Length: 610
Image (cartoon, rainbow, N blue to C red; front, side, top):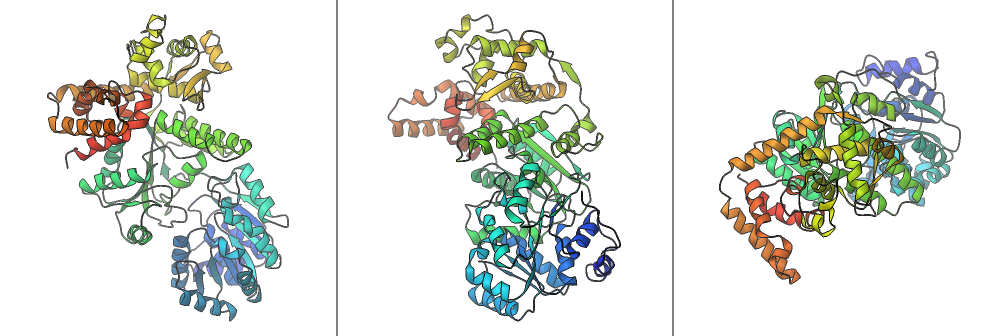
């Protein structure tokens, strides 16, 4: 970490301005030395936690020196909010972006030419225009500040090609002093930023990643819709964000929350632009609004009183997770998070990596990042310790995560692990979770019989555990590096070298007892509810049959090829709300779940009570 003498010229003036213009009595940790380094004329790369006051680090120097400070930002919403905030402080600021009308951008350009502005926010793509660069150079740009600098790196979790122009833009502006900020950049990303953006050696500041006011919690998915509803309803009246993995889910979940009296809005990139902007404005301007969104929402959202962030689906990487939960509690007051995850999430993320156009090296890095996130989900120790360790920091148990407050009991699960590994080995390492779970629990499915797996010694050796418990065990084995998931092989499990050691009895295996008991209780509750339901919902069953009929006609196959009656009857009795719940219905294997799951879940949801 770079250290700066507190007596650096300009530090005292910055502290006075901090109080008189911004109303702050003192710098937050790290701000003062970064400001002093910038005022001394050095290029700077600063990695600072979300909510630590990065913006002030370039706003203060902009006011203390001659010339224009140009701020590159990836989001119009962020520019708009920052400019509104600065003008409220009486600072001459504006933003050049595509949401402005031609007359508005022309008026701003004239103010730039007359050197009336201290800060101008600009989208990165505008700096690829020679005429824009020429006008800015004539106006005397003295400082180029790059926000969300991780966007310049292909190793970053939010790479944006337009950011690659910034190195050339810096040259075209006359080698102007350059400073860059981000909240999430591992060593590979930091190296990429330094190489692509800076033409001179930059002073690098890496401040702590810890946000101790944010409570961390993770849960295995049982019924994600109900879990999210329970979490949000317990925080009724608070502002929060619920992240979903699909556009459809944002709209369905927002509607479900509204039906329970929660002021919830949807947000995703597929919405009409004006509606999306209106929803964002409502969230930013009003209290107690819950935004149900894809990752299209959030970067640069500077709302200090977001009290919770909930992930209805697993985030894309540990960096994404860190940045997204970091939108809560920017005011320093207590905030909460909840992340739901299941094996289906992990498989989807892995498939997205494997099917991307990224290089082999980049895919390798992305796999490692996902593995780190899975390990965080399945961690047996303090969440914050595991999270900070990923960023190279050590810490004591935090006392503010679910594992610290609820406690963790580790139990020996070597025998259970050996049973699972034996099932994988005896089936030739060719099968995915559900088939192996059926094998272990002794379920005579069509596939089990077709492959003769009902004749294996492993058939039924795991009857003492429920299906949900075995699924949990497979996740834990995966998190521990004992088994490996083969995406190209349709999710088949293979055994690692460590796993072979466990199988031979050379290495013990422990797992969190709570992971098993919690999911088992959920499964028992689900089974009890199904048994208590009594008669099947005939209206729902008829609707399910109509859906099946439509699919069968479209494919020109008998109806039972889609699903047999027994499957539809169980759907109508159990009323699954999620893919994971639907997977527990008789006759719903992985292939049919992937092919027909959403269609039948839609029918169940439409018939759910209002």
